[in-house]
Image (spheres, rainbow, N blue to C red):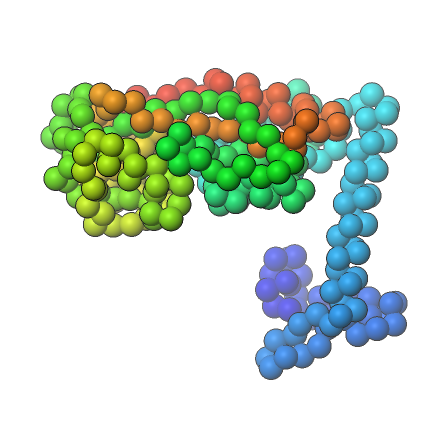
Length: 288
C-alpha cells in the first residue's frame, strides 16, 4: 500500500480511501492482509486484469478516432535503456514538440535484454535496444528489429594517456578490466571480442551501469570498451580513447511490432527516432 501510494503521489490514507470506495462499488473485497502486507484477492486480481484491458481499449479507441480525423495525435509508449534516456531522448522529445505537438511520448527505462519481450507483450509501442553481432539479443515472435545506428567501440583508459591512439585489443590483455556482468549481452560481446583477440579479460570490477563503469575507468581502476553514446554520460575530457585495429561494434535497433503499427502517431514517432539516431554526433576523445 505504501509503495503504491509513493508511486502514485498520494498519501497512504488516500489510497486506502479510494480502495474502500472501489470495494463498495463492486461489492467485493479486493485486498486481504497477509502478515504486515496486503495482497489481492481473486476478485482483486480479476478486476485489475480487466481494468488494464479496458484502459488499453480506451487508449486505442481514442487513437483510432484521432486517426480518422486526419490529426496525428495520441500517446506513444517508448521503452529504452538508460544510455538512450540520457543521450537521445532529449533530442527525440524536442523534435516531437516542434513537429508533432499533439503527440505525447511516454518513456520507460527497460533493461536492454528485456526490450524485445516488452514490445512483444504490448507493454510499450516501440523499443530502442542494442544488438551485438557476437551476442544477438532475443528475437521475439511478432516483433521486428530495424538497425538505426552503428556504433564502434574504443578502448577507454584514465588520463594521462598510456596507450597509443590506435591499438590492438590484445594490447590490453595484461590490464585490469571493468566489465559488465557475463550473463548480459554486452558482457558476452566484450568477452567474445577479447577471446577473439586471444585473451580472457581480467575483470577486477563487474559493473552493469555505464556511468559508474566510466567513472571507475576515469579513476584509474581499470580499462573498458565504450561507444560514442556511452561517452555522453561523462565529460569528454575525462577519459583517453584508443581506436581498435579490429572493429568491434554494437547496433542501436528500433524494436516494433512485426508489420509496423497502424497508428499514425506511432509511425510519426518512429520517423523521429530514425532521424535523431542517424544524426547522433560521435564524441571526440581527448588525450594528454
